[in-house]
Length: 259
Ligand SMILES: Nc1ncnc2c1ncn2[C@@H]1O[C@H](COP(=O)(O)OP(=O)(O)OP(=O)(O)O)[C@@H](O)[C@H]1O
Ligand SMILES: [Mg+2]
Image (cartoon, rainbow, N blue to C red):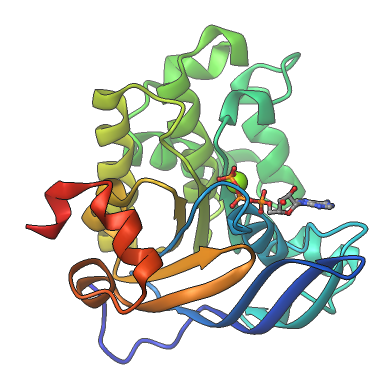
């Protein structure tokens, strides 16, 4: 349940990301409170992933201006040490291809152990967090003995989410988390993210080009095109009473939402 006056755990103001002079992504204002889902939608190349990566401080070689504050840390000005402290434990990424983000030579259990240790969690505490996280994403603990190539795409996505849960991340940045999965598995992963948002108060920033998916999970929607925000606001407004022609075009491609 989203408390009405919950303080945002992620704020973005006047963000601009450039490669040389070319604007790749900009966000005037974005707020994500605990238990809230902000969706960023737009066509391929509109700057969604660039904006999301900026929230993790992953902007090597790019020029970034503006402010991105995650639980008190300004990601734009933070040094590598501060960034590695918050990555995973405060703000976690769930990517489009979780399997390729996992080290192929390591069993999942070893991988999780190392990630937890990096954030100071060892021994009994790490074990407890691991069991609790696997339970909450409905993964069998037996999976920890497997290597990344021995699990399915849906299981890999659940495992990526379990890592965020184990570290008690405040914010999950999900970049097209279901587009590589088949439809039934997609629905299960979406349900899981929605449940974590509702039950554990995790803030979600959810990137997708699929408005049907977005309409089921988003509280706020930001529409991007060519690196700029075309329209943003509560999901009920943007998806049902859009201001921008571009948003209407996107919606027309998914007739079920308009009804
Ligand atoms: N490091 C970089 N250097 C230069 N240009 C980049 C860099 N990263 C991304 N771009 C460019 O920025 C633009 C936005 O890319 P981005 O990956 O953010 O789009 P997207 O909205 O996530 O698209 P998709 O839906 O295909 O994933 C693209 O034109 C891309 O080529
Ligand atoms: Mg992308």
